[in-house]
Every structure is written in structure tokens, then in C-alpha cells.
Length: 196
Image 1: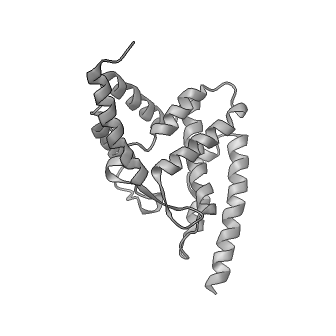
Image 2 (image 1 turned 90 degrees about the vertical axis):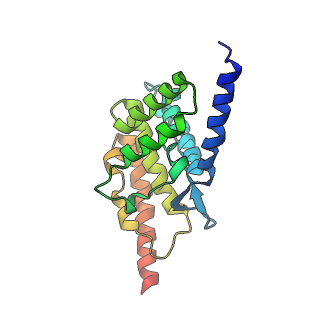
């Protein structure tokens, strides 16, 4: 089916607004010390999922990648709230979903429905595809925190527990987490030594 000119224009309008994700900064830093963008996090998340695809032969990898691409899309409008700064009284998922709906309103209805269904599936983390996407999202985050040039007061202890309910998904994600946690513990110890 060839999209009509009006639909193409709607998609372009959406893409122009979604471009903001390139400038949406996260709490993590690159190895050079520059704040990481949400778009950069999403890129490496997709790369990670792709590289471990062979370990999940029974999974719909295209669906997992779609979830990874859109999982933080709502942050394009109002930014990211780092996990360590999230208010327990505010449900981040509800807030992000409303931001996503605002962004998706630019798209044709069938595209809105498709992306929202993917986001809802990811957020619920019930299907095998969503659980893998969620696990690797958390793994990419903690991996970046072991590579970035973090501030001296960076809370590595928080990182050790972050997202564990998702990253304990299976033996692959557990092994990845163990290796990343070892780096996190090493960095925490180095930071403690420098503080004294």
C-alpha cells in the first residue's frame, strides 16, 4: 500500500518532532565525559539486542528491536528523569505514556496504534520479547555507567541493584549482569579510594 501525500506529511512531522530525542540528555556520560543522549542509549540498546539474537532463537527479533527503538520515545518532549531521582509517588510510566501519546498524535491513526501497542507491551514486560527488551535496556544503562567519565559523587551502589528484576531474566542476561556488576564494583572501590 502506497501512503498518500497527507500521510507522508504526518510521518515527516512526527519524525521532525522525534528528532528532539537526539538532544534529550540522560544521567550517563560518554567515555569522553559528554552527557549521553537518549538517542545514543537507544542505538546501543538495539546493537546489544542484535548481537545476542542467536541466544534467543524462539523470539521475534524484529518486534524486540521495534520495542527498543520506541521505548524512550516519550522523553523527546519533556526529557528523562534518572532512576535515582524518580519520585516514588509519581508513576513514571503513566507520565511517559502521556508524553508518548502527545508525540504520536502527529501520526496517522494506524501508526499511532502500532507504536502505542509496542510501548504498552514493553512497559508491561510480560511477553518474552518485552522482557528481553526491558532486560537489555537496563543492561545497556549499567554498562554505560561503567564506561562513562562519571562525576566523583556517582552512586555506583545504586547501579548494583538497578533493574535487577529485569536483568535476572535468564542465564545470558544474568551472565552479562555479573560481568558488568564486577566492573561497577571495581569502579566503586576506586572511587572510595580516591575519596580518602
